Length: 344
Length: 161
Image (cartoon, rainbow over all chains, first blue to last red; front, side, top):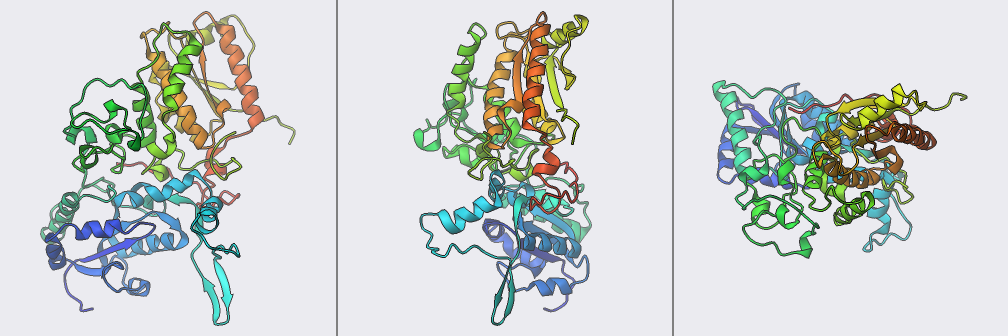
């Protein structure tokens, strides 16, 4: 690699699906501008770098590091510390590193239950010796080590200091470009950077603000799972009983999902001043349940409301789909026999 | 250990009924468990589920929400909203491994000091039987997230901007 004066860009994946990498490439021809402005210092998805290359850099050598993926195992955590040390600006890129995302849903169960499902119980598994991964194993050539699989998935800011958060699963191309533009102009022209800890590439209004569907007063007597109903076009999905997280989710995506009849999943995370997205969603959705009035007897009232609540089969998984690691409780207290959080 | 476990119960009492019920229990010198830490709210409908989760994470062993009987709410149907939230929250907390007894909803009007006192007594005994929750250390376990029994460190609470 030739030394030059270009700012250095790194992107690393921890526990992630690779979608964030693709989202960077998805900024289309602007990627050429990125290439023009930045020198890639580390980007395992698209270029051949090794960890030892990064270890060889002086501290703060990388100007901007886009870190995606949650902290799932010891390797993820080690890389987070390494990249923090070597980077001037560390961005938690995408929902996984910002707040845990899909990997953190396993916080509703145990490490053991997760491994059992993956290696022993899935119908497609062929594992007659019940082999589970070991952190170290002796082979004739020597001892092999693999990273330790953690019990609890964490977000990036729970292990290292993070400068900015770029939400989304994955972040939307115009937002990525807007953020890169700010960083580029800061690096090239000395323009001011946003304050540390900012959530960048998103707005501070709810998804509903960007959603063009027609909205009225909501009063829901039962909830539907996506396969149970064909949504009426043009009408607010939540009004039709489809769980749509738009009301408790930060805008910035352009309300893509609701516009095609799929309720917002909540990937842009909570709005400002909200600590726990799931709790806020729960609060909002419970408020629009349209049964029960003050004239009813107490047990009748409870029965009627419970019947509507029962049409929401998995509140924790639905409301915390993207934010489990960043929620107030962060994980389940596992005391059920099946390795799940189920209390008795 | 000889000492009996004394659960900490955070109680959100509505200004118009249940807080007055607690007041009445006091003036009437009703004897009941001192385990509830009272927080007065204007209406049980004011109790954001975040309050409950925060209480549980930060050391409470149980949370009681108390309000006016349905039909008697000072704000007509604030308590109906409470009930809707409560039933959904209870279902979600079950998935998170929090036992039903740790979160309770009680209706107690301003004249029902004994009902409130009985409810606090009953809940204290139920939570005592379940044992401490101690979310920060027992569930989060501190440290590297491997759930090792020994608390390694208390991860600082991350405040988003």
